Length: 264
Image: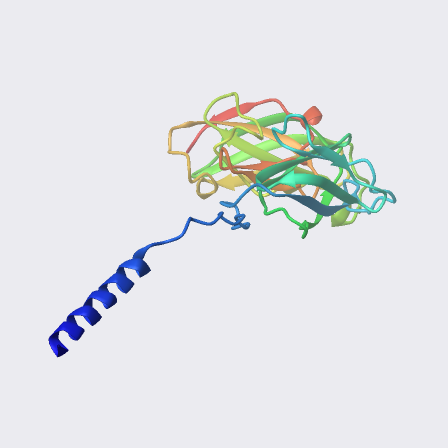
């Protein structure tokens, strides 16, 4: 009798465990939350400021009218700054963007690889200080190999600043060096520090560089050179697509002729 009771108990336990293995219907999946850039596309605002100066760094009175565009957007997504320099791009989807800044009298400036999460908290880009394109015009450019390992570069920069002008308002020139006569500020192999143009006279100047300033060129190689006027603050950025440093404050209209020399 005891054995029979034990068998019945064991059978009941087995039936209970079997019943426990059964599962009910699968419930609905909840909505996925945002998980950064790999999450669902959200929309949100991008906000920032610009402050504007003339070619010598004197702040302008009004910062309005600078256009900010999401590069490649179709339809175009853009906005303009107000008098205080504030801009607001609304309803921008989650993503990484390049922003283009344009206004007559200023070179094209870009903010590259801006990461925007979206949602209720806006992406704040802070402030960019942008200077007007310099009026400096570069002419009469020549370059020759000098004595030993030197290279002598001569040019003329106008308009001429008065004799005794402070360094802050002296004109500046940047030279770009390339391997073909198609060298420009967008297509170059190397560049050197911007150069101050001495005030007074007719704007002519000469500089002497050494072989060590041209490390990407080999001795005997033909080097092509071009010069642009620009402001002390060059509105510089690096293009992430080409890895080229862009000095967007150069005066494209005042570019020099192309000269060349054989590297000593």
